[in-house]
Image (cartoon, rainbow over all chains, first blue to last red; front, top):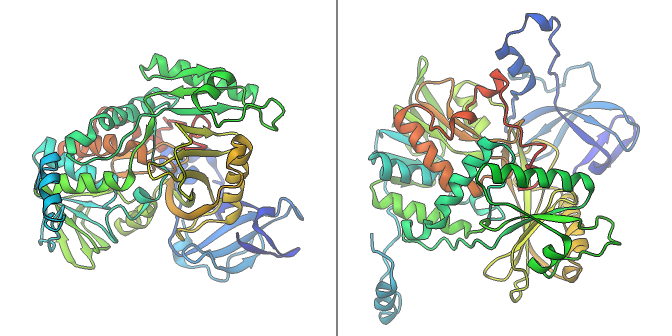
Amino acid sequence: MLLIPCPFCGPRAEIEFRCGGEAHIVRPADPATLDDAQWADHLYFRRNPKGVHHERWWHVHGCRRWFHLTRDTVSDRILAVYPVGSRSPLASREDER
Amino acid sequence: MVRYSIFTLARNALTGHEHWPRAWRSPDPRPAYEVVIVGGGGHGLATAYYLAKEHGIRDVAVLERGWLGGGNTGRNTTIVRSNYLHPESAALYDHAVKLWRDLSQVLNFNVMYSDRGVMMLAHSQHDVHILKRHVHANRMAGVDNEWLSPQEAKEYCPPLSIDPRARYPVLGAALQRRGGVARHDAVAWGYARAADALGVDIIQNCEVTAIRRDGARVVGVETTRGYIATKKLGLVVAGHTSVLCAMAGFRMPLESVPLQALVSEPVKPVFPCVVMSNTVHAYISQSDKGELVIGAGTDQYVSYSQRGGLQVIEHALEAICELFPMFSRMRMMRQWGGIVDVTPDRSPIIGKSPVEGLYLNCGWGTGGFKATPGSGHVFAWTIAKDEPHPLAAPFSLDRFTTGRLIDEAAAAAVAH
């Protein structure tokens, strides 16, 4: 079980959280102009990296607030915690969609 | 290849079993092959076998990063069934169930397929409706499935508790009698031995490090044992599909998560069938060695760690103890995780990719073992003819673009 450092409550057990999946997937600003392939990319296609991954977490059984984590998907080590609306201190070019 | 039979067994018994030949060769990779399959699990080896057997393509290499069947093939709970809701899925998985029936004879290798029946429990009115819908849908699709009352379920599986005072009482069950279990390692070994005998090179300890393209076409793979040229590349790498596809330059609609299972100490035969419960989320059977084989759930986050959280196992065991109180003092011996590639609709992806000559067989998520023979069979057809097998056609990658999903997520995929 992960020990997750909630930026609002401090370190808590993973069972208090829900993972919201890959972070920084921006909803299309002008949905009507997207073709099917672009919609598929937005809805279904994911980086799913072996290594550094930025993801959304929700402290559902705690403060009920959302935040972002950067985690290594091989070691499961949490590398950074940062607020919604900002970029990870470990962000790289590969993260751009 | 030495044909296994009672006579070879007797002859080798007389010489103290010291002269059995290796079941397959261990060749060095050649510089080029007509087809290269990446992934030496059950699906990859089955693909190579059917390519050689049914399509006469024997210039085939299977590249395996570790050892044969060391990934999800050796980590699953060995359940075989085909009672999926949608006709496309039922047809695909039933194709596999039909191949399972005489697989031991076909491969001349005992895969220990046992059609002891798979029973899925209903614990609420909603479950009853859903499972009855499954029963009807399956019977219309020509797949056996029948509805049992709680008493009938108890008769079929005596250890089951049908106490109406339970927190999640058993209100009925759907039983697929043709479902069952098989020996997972034997499936990989049996396909490896049969494919090797037909001339397929099985190359272990050979990791693919890059995929070479010439424009839109695949031309070969870089591996830890050198460059191998090929015009047809099949990726059958389960949890690592996204990693390999990134090497070829495209993304996939997949997320890789750990799925856990565990086994108990071995005991005498006490458990006659496979029981699954989606609501309390547990599935259990007893292996021929006597161990209870218990499947747990997936972790909620992307991971390649081949470990999972302990709370996931705890949750599964709570459910097992509630359904089968007699197992409450059973000791668990081993626990492990495998990395499964989950699609948004919980159905597999079989067919062509955006790169010409690169074929995909992935997305089996938490339930790929049961499909092993059928998956290899339709994938070999797809590679050989460069067009999807009719049973595989609905499972193409472009369904995520067209929107024609095969949504087994709500229907069946909570537990495999």
